[in-house]
Every structure is written in C-alpha cells, then in structure tokens.
Length: 101
Image 1 (cartoon, one colour):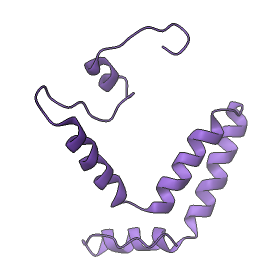
Image 2 (image 1 turned 90 degrees about the horizontal axis):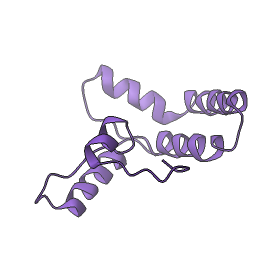
Image 3 (image 1 turned 45 degrees about the vertical axis):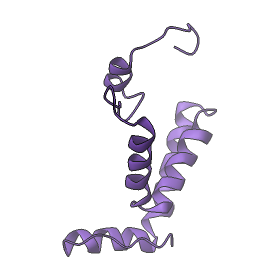
C-alpha cells in the first residue's frame, strides 16, 4: 500500500491487521479511539514502550537484527517488577497494578 498507493476499505484494513478496530457507522470514532487508548493504558507501560521501540527501531533493521532487538528487549522485560506483577495478578485473579518498574 505504501509503495502502490492502493486504498483499502475499513473492513479490509481490519482483516489484515492494519487497524485494531473499525467504528460502526454513526458511532463516535473519537470515543472509540479514547476507549482503545484507555485499554492500552491499563497494560504495562514498559511492555507498551518496548513494543513501540521494537516496531520503530526494527523497521530499519535486517530481519536478523530486528529479531535480535526483540530478544534483547524481551530479556529486559523479564526482569521487571511489572512482569512479576502481571504474573501475580493473573494467579491471584485480580487486575494488575503496573508501576512502570
């Protein structure tokens, strides 16, 4: 799409994973976007940070380098308090309280 300029419908964009959600006709798209943002904000801030880092930095790397970056970032996340909190909250069947540490 980037190189060809081909347009895709909202449904196709959803189907190929280009977008996370499509607002229904008549639905408040801004409200839907805010709801998605709130859902993301409930997750681990470090997980979101490193996921974004992998995508942004990885786009300019070879496949091998990008996989190495992903592995490195994953290793960093394995030692965080947020990871331990995520596991504990799952086992205790409660909502996690992520601190970004």
